[in-house]
Image (cartoon, rainbow, N blue to C red; front, side, top):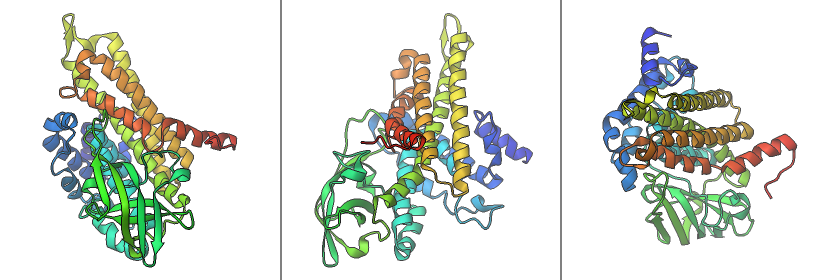
Length: 403
C-alpha cells in the first residue's frame, strides 16, 4: 500500500480502526474520494433542510450516475478480468453515502440494488441488453414494486396484485405501497400473481401509463428525503414482451432480495459512522460547566461504545463482502448482518442523541436528529428485525416459525 493511499484512507475513513479499507485498490479509493468530495462540497450545506422539507437534492441522481460506478476504469485497475465492481468497493460506496445521509443511500440502493437486479436477474438476454446498461449509467431510473398496502414480510404468500392474460397482453389490478421513487422512475418492475397459475411474474410499467395512479406518502418520521409512493393499478395493460421472462416463482424474487440485503447491512454501518461523526462534531464545540463536554468521562464512554458498535458492524460487513465476492450469497449471513448492524445502529443513535441533549431533536440544525430518525427505517426495511431473526432461527433449529 502506497503512502499516498494510506494518507487518503486515514483522512477519508478515520473511524476505520481495523484498517479494513486498506484492501481497496488505489483506483477504488480514488473514486470513493470523488464520491465523498461530491457529497461534502455540493450537498452538505443543505442536507438537513432537505430532510426537514422532504425534498430530494436537485441533480443527485445525475451526479451519482456521472461517477459511472458500475463501469469506471478506476474500479478495474489491477482486476482487468473482472466484470463487476468488487464487493468491498460496493460496501464502501454504500457506507460512504449512508455516513453522509441514509435517505440518499436508500434512493441509490433501491435503484442500483433492488430495481437494477430485478432486470439483471429477471430479464431475458434481450431485456438485459436493452435495460441494464441504461440503468447502470442512470440514463433510466427504476424502483422495486413488490410491497403492498396489506402485505410486507408475508408478501410471498399474500401477494394480492393480480395479472390476467389475454392473448399477448396482461391486465393488472392491485396496489403497491412504500415504493421509493416510483413517481420519478422511467420503468417500474411490478410484481403480480398470474391469476390462472398462482405464480408470481414481474411486469414493466411506466408512471404515465393508463390505469396507473401514484401518490407520494406524506408525514414520514424517517427517510424524509426518500419519496415513497403508493401505486394503484386499475386494469393496466402490459404486453407479454414487457414481462421479465425469468421471474416465475417466489424463489426468483427471494434471489433479488438476498442479493441486496447485504446493502442494508452496509447502510446501517455507514449510518453508524455518521452517528459517530455527528456526535463528535457536537461534543467538540459544546461547552457546559465551563469546559468542552468532550472532556467528561460519561461522554467519552458513550463515544467509545458507538465506535465499538461501528467497528463490529464494519468487520461483519467486510466479511459479508468477501463472501459475496466468492459467490457465497447466504441468507443467514446477510440476515445476521442486517439484523445486528441495524440493532447496534439503533442503540448508538440513542446514545448520540442523548449526548446532544435538547439540541439533538432539532433536525434542521443537528445531523444526529436525521440519523436518529432514519435508524428506525433501517431497523424495519428489507425484512424487520424479527423476520431476519426467524431466518436465522430456522437455520439453527431446522424448524420454520414464520407461521
